[in-house]
Length: 318
Image 1 (cartoon, rainbow, N blue to C red):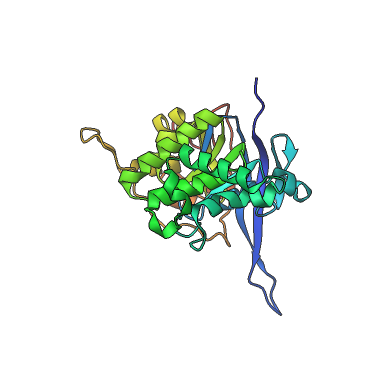
Image 2: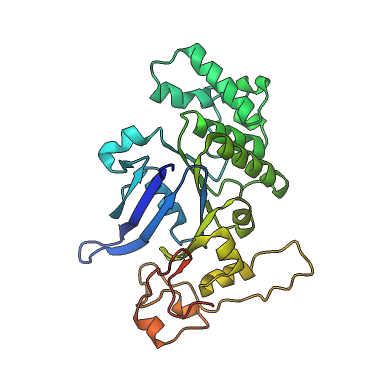
C-alpha cells in the first residue's frame, strides 16, 4: 500500500498585529488544529468563506511560512525550516490569478525553464528546452507558443502555463489555490479536466482550495470545511455533500447554485456578522450565527469528533 504524500497534525498559524509603545500586540489565530492526510492520486478540498484560513494553510504547506504550532511531513520528511530546500521539489503551487502569477517580461519557454535553472543547475540548456517543450504538449500548448509572451494568451492558456511551470520539478503534491476562480465558466471545465488528467497520469496529490462548492464537487475526494480558522467538518465528498452534519456546511450547500431546475433547495440565510478574528467568542465560533445554538454552544468549544465523517458541533445534523 502506498504511503501518504502529506500528513499534517494540529497545524496552527498565529499573527501578532497592532501594539505600540503602551499597548501589547493582539494575536490573530488565522489557523488552528488543522489535521489531514493526502494519498497519491487523491484530492483534499478545503472550503469556506473569506478569512476562514484556507490561504494560510496553503502558505504553510508550500513552505512559505512556518507553523506556530503543529507539524507536517511531505513524503516522510518533516516540513521544518532546515528541510525546506529538500522539499522544494516535492511541493508546488498554482495561484489564483494567471495574470499576476507570470512574469510578463519573460517568454513562455523561459518561464517553464526557470525552475530547472534554479533547482537543476547540472542540466544543459538543450535538456531544459526539451523538457519545457514536452511540458507544453502535456498542458495543451502548441510548439509555437514557446517564444511568445504571457500577454499574448487568454486567461485559460495562462493558467495552463502556470500549471506547466509547477510540474517542471515533478512534484508529488500540488497546492491549487482557487485555480479556476479567475477564469470564465466556459474555460473552468477545461482547466479542471486538465488537472484531473495530469493527476491520474502522474499520481499527484492535490490540496485544492476553493470557495466554489460546485467545483469542489467535481474534483474532490475528501473535503475539509473551515470556519474562522478551524476545521468544523471533515469527510468524503459524498458524505459532506449528501449528508452535511455541521449547520455551517448545510448553509454553504444551500447557497450553491444547481443546474437541476426541478430540485428544490431550502436556502438558509445566516443572520449576524462573522466574529472578528481578533476577538473570537468563547465556545463555538459559529454560535452567534447558528439557528441551533444552545447555552453550551456559547461556553464550550466543540472538538472535531467522529470516525470517518467528523464534525465539530454539539448538535450535529442527523
